Amino acid sequence: MLPIIDAIPISALDADLAQLPASARILTHKDYEVWLAPAANIPSILQEIGRLREISFRAAGEGTGQAIDLDGFDTYYQHLFIWHKQRHAVIGAYRLGFSDDIMPEHGLTGFYTYQLFDYTPAFIEQLQPCIELGRSFVRVEDQRSFVPLLLLWRGISTTAYLNPTYRRLFGPVSISADIPPLFRQLLAETLLKLHGEPELAAQISARNPLPDSHFSPDMLAGLANATALESVLQANMPDVRMPVLLRQYLNLNGRLLSFSLDPNFNNTLDGLVLVDLDRVEPNTLSRYMGTQEAHEFLYRTGTHHVDVDTSKPRAA
Image (cartoon, rainbow, N blue to C red; front, side, top):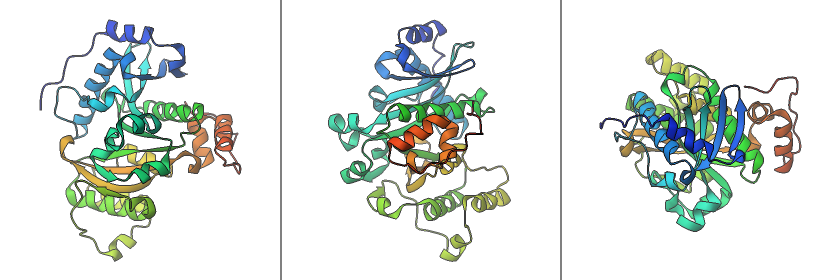
């Protein structure tokens, strides 16, 4: 692997931030701010995001092996990032691709996930308008805290609240090559069984699929939920945990549509996950979006039968 580039000077990061409009700051929490901006407006911050991506991905047994993790998609995707005011540092980020911007300009090949999965224009049309999520990370030294991941999802939820036509999110979720192939295949097959959506999955094929199944239907039938699957993993590999982000998507009622190996990302196994925000449990959505905001969002998307527990305070 190539040596990772040096940290971008704080003065350059501050200069990028100073020229962003106030509307680009979509959330604040104590010393944290969440911003959403296009690549052209944050040249230095984007370089730092790419540097920190590669560091965090390598630490998880993934990564591109390049000096910085940036690609052509970054130039026209939006970037949601957490800024720590006191440390003058990027803490984490997500990459957001808005389908109604991407399709007219770039077509299907404009989506990052199209490199991993072959899907039809009809697949995107069924989701339109939607947001492709990807390249999420939290800075290695901040991963012990749940606050950054929570803030990233609050940022995504706030983006959807401000733009309620974007109620569907999709993108890759990674399972590291550090997990032995047999257990990765068990994860993939069980998740497709428990959290799949066959009608949509029929329109998708993996460009680098897993081998044929090693598991009998009876064995898979014994894994009735994700908790049972995680128990099997822990019994056989005590140091292995289901990826945090994958667990997060499942908490949001995410559905797994396909799995594909990524030879350009240290042979990581990527699952294509879909989240319909209007199918998320109202109290869960309230945790990220806010109670009143969740009510309004679900009303505007046509989900009128909401019953949010207003006794629970808004997280973070």
